[in-house]
Image: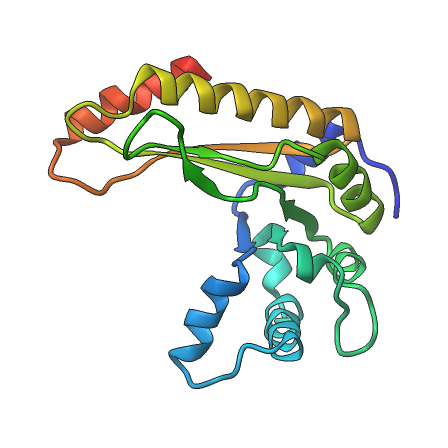
Length: 202
């Protein structure tokens, strides 16, 4: 695959009139979706589902990039073309989810830290070789009476920064996703204030 600079990839991802498709559902999440339509969640069914998405005629006119799951980036379409190459051939940028999910943050009841930094440099190198040109890492923050704490905000900001630096080192554009969850009975003003604090920490 041709080499692209980080800036070229970043600009292409935010091309006017286009968006990024998240096709990075975990095995448990996609199983729930398949269960709802009485389809067994086998590797081949998951591959066929992604193949259907990726080969939809004209999708490339509206999609700039697609976030893949670890399983998906290693799979191929019905014609044997690896998914990253199939996407590249349509002008769609292959990406990869690299975080390992939000886990309880020690000494912070009700708060989480996103894990996955251990071994990330090596995983990014492998994903780059498989064709990934951008990555995603998501951190979540819950709004409550005493949350998110400064501890949770800064701990996740640190992890997001380390992830982003490792991506750039590997020649992969990092998507940094600090998500302040909407759940709760708080006001929109509170949501704005908390989101501002989280972004300032980043």
